[in-house]
Length: 143
Image (spheres, rainbow, N blue to C red):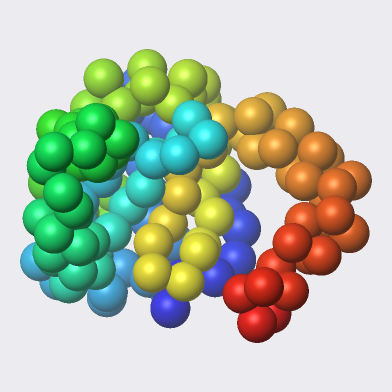
């Protein structure tokens, strides 16, 4: 399970270190794709396959289903961790998430999210300010 918040710097070659405590979860590499809220999602091969199975069952006749599948699948890239536990971010994904040198990796159960550090800080300020309203909306989900 991915949990926690980790700050890293992208190097000049767009390499990003994966937190050492998670590196063993990627024996077959990882899949990185466009995420929601202008961040990137990093999945293990197993979790990626679960998502792909769900996407493949979406109705192709619905525009929103096609759009979401395109974003997630066409925007995806297989990546391999190097000996130092780093992955290379493709330029198009770095641009999508507007990543600068300082980034945050946020663990969210079945994935890591990659955020520009300033965007993450802004997102946290807004969502924490609205946390009471957000939590009230989760009652219907049994939380």
